[in-house]
Image (cartoon, rainbow, N blue to C red):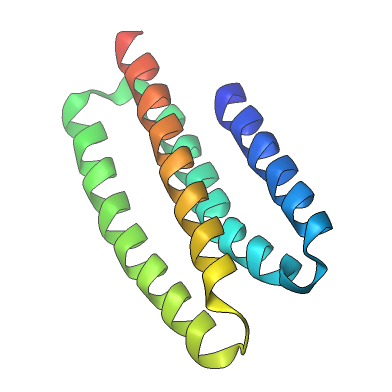
Amino acid sequence: MMLYTYSVILLIGMASIVSGLCFNVAREIFFGLSAPVMVGFLTIFFMSKYADSGATTMNKLLMRGFAMKFIFYGTYILTIFTVYSFQPIPFICSFTVSFIVLHLVETVVLKKLQEK
């Protein structure tokens, strides 16, 4: 959990630096960062909660989580693009970077949980 928290702090720091340089895209950057951070914290929480329950239970949890993430991310992006008028490129860049980095950290945390 600490590795994930440090990764989130790093991403927020990088987003703050970029937002400080470009004031007009600060909201887009933080909207792009917020969804992967929230979903990632929930994923890490449930993975650590059910880490000792066995491989079958963990696999079911990961599959359900994948389906829920798929629906949530699609709904989130669709809602952001239809409801909120903004510049899409900073949103897409921050969403993509945070999505990839945080999912890589989730795999490292999952590997550490499986080694226990």
